[in-house]
Length: 170
Image (tube, rainbow, N blue to C red; front, side, top):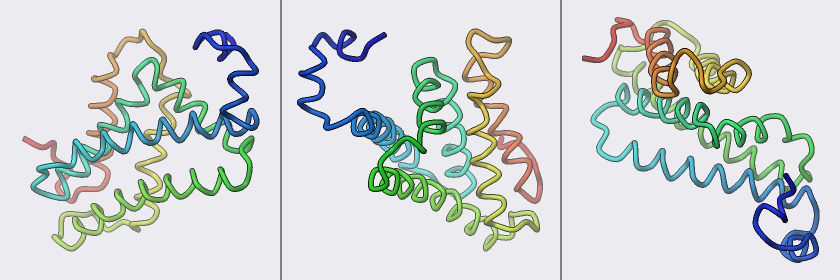
């Protein structure tokens, strides 16, 4: 479906607000990141530990990718980065790095507390995020598992992979 038609304006009206298709794509991807970042902030409020924060980050990220509308955004954001102008690509890459840093900080906190397996923190950071980013490649709604069930499974697998006790949080 044509974006201009979907929002009820002319193509000329759409391009009045965006200089190019790449500019529109960047705006869509940035908007998706803003929504996700706000959700992360909400989920991290009141966390009592790095373990709880890591669990919430992974679950929230996985759930956002498995929800119907957000799955399309996730695929777009992953697959179309190469189509962006360099300045937009850099800006979005910085947002992605900020998320990776959130995960890394939690893993560093777990390591300092003696709760992290003997893993390389950089490799673990990218692997956890990669687990979630792979979801749009295989999960499609409706499926045998609901989005919440998939997010729970990914979260439990991730936590088991990095925690020394590997236990599910009680």
